[in-house]
Image 1: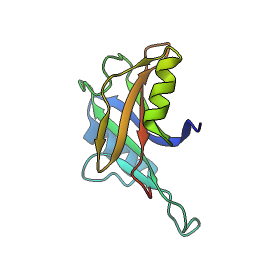
Image 2 (image 1 turned 60 degrees about the vertical axis):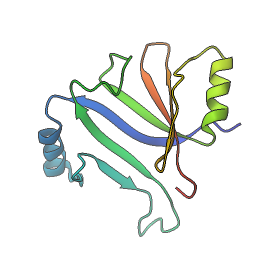
Image 3 (image 1 turned 90 degrees about the horizontal axis):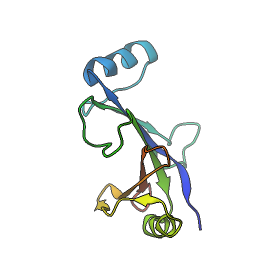
Length: 128
């Protein structure tokens, strides 16, 4: 079974996400969008048949999105079959959240690594 197929996003806590995004825009040339993050699109002139994106997003310092982890970051991994992977992780004794979100943005599940870091697993919608 395929497990992780790529990185879907890097998310981290920030004291001032808007100011930090502006710093990255000004100094590193990131195209920070109105929603506060960057979508690195895989489709480019050099890769016209590629699909997908990788996100870079600062969150407010007091976000609960990474809970129960106390870490200041969360990595989102792209996966092939979320439900199969979550079942495999449970059978392997991993700390898998019961919650699964499914929407037009895809399927999302979470697991904690042995050091307590929250890891987001994302099965993109078909064609992405």
